[in-house]
Image (tube, rainbow over the protein chains, first blue to last red):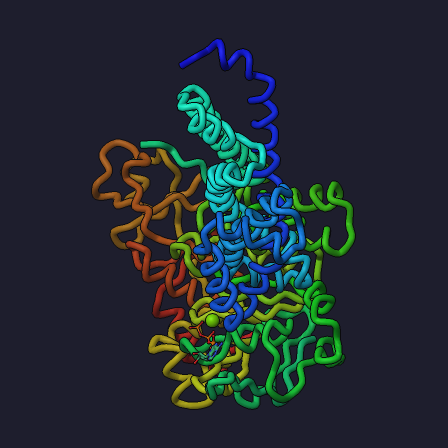
Length: 216
Length: 368
Ligand SMILES: Nc1ncnc2c1ncn2[C@@H]1O[C@H](COP(=O)(O)OP(=O)(O)OP(=O)(O)O)[C@@H](O)[C@H]1O
Ligand SMILES: [Mg+2]
């Protein structure tokens, strides 16, 4: 490790880290917002569920690099436009979360849904005030997977020259110099862990009602 | 009043769950739907607040057909106690109870104050208010379910096996508490159960349904016991219905109550022997409340608590023939202790006295 190099490059590294965070988190939020209505739709209809979940599964198998390269053709953006990354990762997040949201709504006990209906909640009130809140633990679990997956997928965009921590890898390879590679890996892992921790905290804050599991 | 007029429900798969049901649940009374598993009780109940839509026929709420109403608004007029409580897992107990008032536009603060009162009213400590449903036992959750249905003070209540899933002792307590509450609030209630004892104990009137969703008989509990409409009802009501129907027969004046000589704790063995009739003497306290029976033969010195046999169950004079008979049969002296409303001794009866009274008046007044 060359700490002197790290010191000199710190401004640049912070810049790359900032981009990495943006490129990972924005698609996560957009993806969740899109997956909520789609997941609800899949949950509502027995016929739509296999269709939506099937298509989502297929989308997830498209290699990320292919998506990064193809999207500019579809969106009419420049190949170097960070929007491509945001769009691609949003698609992955949606693909992952549609099923998660549908399963979260499915996880709400039938008695609870019936009680909400019998109390006189309208459909949307029951969804917003009962079903989604009760489904939060399942959604957060899915969100954690999506967050970690996004952090690692963003690095691939380095091959297209879009600035983020992955750029440290390409730089290291070109210079045959390990310091930036190690710094990049460590920062990616730390970033993934922090995002994961934040989602855990958010989940705890939203679900004070879940039984506290006592470690045995 | 809730009225079913020719109501039929056929599920899409062809199952006819309810078949041409005609039924009227009068205002302020507790009507029970009872019948074997799968006879369409839950389906009938859920058609009232339109959780299930009838295939044909009409249900009226105070003479208005429910079919034309906005379903959500209709449901907000009716308290519903779901089987196994069905509480909202993400809401505290107090917020569970406050659900309907808040939905009806009351401020959260006001609704919570009222909810707290109700929580205590159904017999739970106020300290439970901040808990979540998983922190309560099944019986406690069912009480919360009842409180939640009562919170908006609805004129109508639907209850689906509200006291199931708890042990018989707790069930008995819940039933007693609920009867007391209903005497105060007098709501129009339809309650579903498959437990005939519960139906006979709680119902002002009982509708017995048979599999296939047809009404077999609608009658008061004592009428069901004394004149079942057919073999199915007779069978369903049970084998010891003759004895159980005594539970609906008032004793008032029908049985001669004999005088009973009594002693108090501390009485000498001689006094006990002098007052005893047969082998047993009744011991009372300073205000003539019965304490138990003693056998003078076993007393050395004076009568103490150790000498008391506590197996007899005193009957209240305003109670039923069944309680009176039970008092006699459970008493070691075979003389049943009869007390007044304050628990003070009036006298004793024997089983023979009770049976004679029953035989003398085969059609005793069976008002409740
Ligand atoms: N959604 C449904 N689709 C098809 N058949 C149904 C449906 N719900 C209930 N049934 C059938 O309708 C009949 C009546 O059901 P219901 O739930 O009303 O019975 P119940 O009297 O409440 O029985 P239990 O005492 O077991 O709760 C049963 O034969 C049941 O199998
Ligand atoms: Mg049922």
